[in-house]
Amino acid sequence: MGYALVTGADRGLGLGFVRQLLLKGFTVFAGRYASDWQGLPELKQQFDERLHIIELNVAEDASVKEAARLVAIHTDRLNIVYC
Image (cartoon, rainbow, N blue to C red):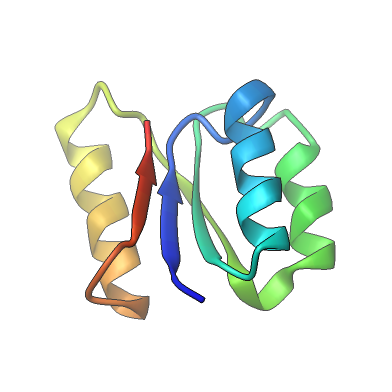
């Protein structure tokens, strides 16, 4: 279908966006800030090939650049970005 990036994907609305995008067929790059939340690992078990969990702190330039590098390994475009 397409590619999406969701920041703050650990819980709440971000996790909900990730779930809905996966159900619609998107490949999702989920920006994780707090690794102790279990929602993303649970989704990873169900959508292994289409869910890429990446460490992301949008307040740190180095973290954002590393996330962009990791996304670029898989695709040269994003159809949706949720921040």
